Length: 75
Image (cartoon, rainbow, N blue to C red):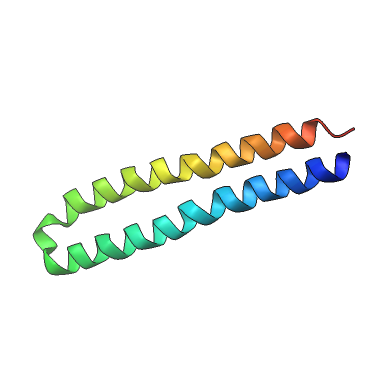
């Protein structure tokens, strides 16, 4: 049973990091392209991008929390 919990913890952090990681790359690419096209709007674009990245990072932190909870059940 402990082996399954360990695998579940690994999958929880792996999958919860994959999606937001890809999304952050796409968001940063779009923001940089927007800044290149409209340099005068770079401040607004930067603030919006940082806020969006923070929300995406929260998903990874939730996955890490679940992984810690699962690992806590081992032993």
